[in-house]
Length: 355
Ligand SMILES: *Cc1c(COP(=O)(O)O)cnc(C)c1O
Image 1 (cartoon, rainbow, N blue to C red):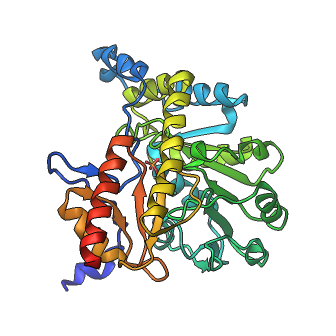
Image 2 (cartoon, rainbow, N blue to C red; image 1 turned 60 degrees about the vertical axis):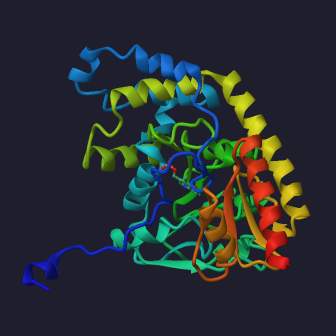
């Protein structure tokens, strides 16, 4: 290594699900919405005037935070917007996890948390889920530098009861607790309402999954005015213009079209529930996922073999080569037609394997 490399900040980056450039694949690996975004979003983009692009965007992203605030009946001073929830979460780690004590999160969870912790030199400790992949609330009682978990959790899809979340909050009043609600629209029980009650609770959401805007990069944090002020101070010390003009307009349009949102999310939930039953018929053990993906294990076939066979058939799912979950597949809920193709392939492949 050259000597200048001694002082390089070295990190092991997060590995995103692949975005293959192959035509005609069924892509069920990154929890994208199988339906397009609201037509109102495309209209807003068509109406983008070149003069707006010439100018710097609103550093406060006010139109966007106000649209989100209106939807939830809260003040926009309690809303922060970022470039996808990944950007929001990175800002949160940088702002709120600044203790010598370890930040706590589950051992099986969104695999970006430990990457941010390492990047920002934040000490952390992973807390094992129970044997049914449940979060054990008592494990978060001790001293720590902050707490973060997704609800529903990823990649298991399993949600926590609100009473368990409030229990963790009651035991952690001296640190910031972050609930990552990337999938909450497919679950139903948001903790957003608790942010009025707990000054140290931050709820993070995204338009990537339930609003089909992964390509536009829009995420939010909701919390007390104090938390949002601290978050904005760090953001303005880093890059004032994270949200570009088109993202602000597209996000606003998506949030305002409640009818389309309800229609597509109900369709995805219905497909998910049907898919759970179909997968069980095929010999899979299926977690009771409340997200837009399934987390499954086959009674006989190894996940790695299934993953490879599916890939060869042009069906891309997610496989994590990690302790405890290396025999599972995470399969995004696609359209009914895509899921039927998946079931048909699995049925014939499993039959062939058995023979
Ligand atoms: C998808 C996901 C995110 C990030 O989504 P963005 O596209 O950056 O908004 C954050 N947390 C979890 C648990 C996710 O699954």
